[in-house]
Amino acid sequence: MLVKIPLPAPLAEGETLEERLTSAEIEFRNVTKRYGEVAAVKDFSLTVRRGEFLTILGPSGSGKTTALMLLAGFASPSEGEILIAGKSVAAVPSYRRDQGIVFQNYALFPHLTVSRNLEFPLEMRGVKAHERSKRVERMLERVHLSDFRQRMPSQLSGGQQQRVALARALIADPPILLLDEPLGALDRNLREQMQGEIKSLHKEFGKTTICVTHDQEEALTLSDRIVVMRDGRIEQTDTPEALYDRPATRFVANFLGEANILDDADFKVESDNELPAGTVAMIRPERICIADQAARMRADAQQRQAVTGTVVDMIYAGPLRKYHVRVGSGVLITRQHVGSGQKIFQPGDEVRLEWLRSDLRFVRA
Ligand SMILES: Nc1ncnc2c1ncn2[C@@H]1O[C@H](COP(=O)(O)OP(=O)(O)OP(=O)(O)O)[C@@H](O)[C@H]1O
Image 1: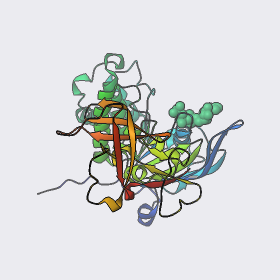
Image 2: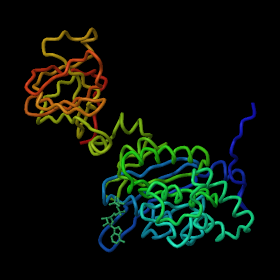
Image 3: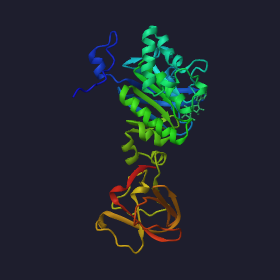
Image 4: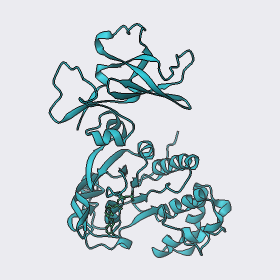
């Protein structure tokens, strides 16, 4: 069987193979960006590998967009530097950085048809008319918009417009793709569909992609790695699984998914060892099992911890049930898959919560 493998871009003029093999695609070195008194990004250092899909995730105002704008060249660092393919881009204007960009509100040209919108970046790069129309047709087909080629952007749905924006960002084959809340304006179903589309475009084209979002689910679904930002600084960088399973801080544990933080004030955590100074214990809701108080402990009781409490709330959420259980002066959350034969608890029920000791994590407080 013949397998088609997309090849990376040929070596640029002056680029050696050694440089290509060893250099990171993008590097932020101790970048700070100040707007007057406000430091929007502080001492930001990050290496992005070639072909990686990296998401910058954080609450509003944490500096995500500023980091992306610095990379795009729409703003310049107050301190530090940014390197692309091993070279500082301090003196390179944004239009010469060879990046495809999709912003939530980075509108298509409203007075140009879909085809003309796609042609524009090629025209800017001096691609000949014959070649341009071939590439536009190919790209339209790829994003399933061939039938819309003559429409104006205003005659397209939000999802279709974003597909055109993605196609326009990719058509000139830039090595880097920047996405700023690309799906922010879409409703939930469409967003999920477009996440699939972005993922498959990334697989197919292999662009080094930096995506900014405040949507944790989007970050978990799309990314090879996630950078969690807080107040202009990087809080933690890791793969989605590692961030979810082993968050380093209380902030990351709470921001990425739901977390039960076992504060000393609310729960007396019995531990064989002292918790390291400055840390608290944390457990994910789906790691806690809920059972009748009188139910027998599971066979591996030594490896488990159990507490008793009273159900204060049960929330039905499709395939999941979420229980809030009062334990002492605190509340623990547990999430159970809805399965056949599983007991359903109601507010007021006395229950036992159990978990494996190995599912407890400690995070910096
Ligand atoms: N041009 C600017 N002038 C002054 N302050 C700015 C400017 N751009 C950003 N800031 C400030 O820098 C901080 C970080 O903003 P930024 O837009 O990067 O955050 P964000 O994480 O992308 O937020 P959001 O998710 O709301 O877009 C904020 O406090 C913001 O007010």
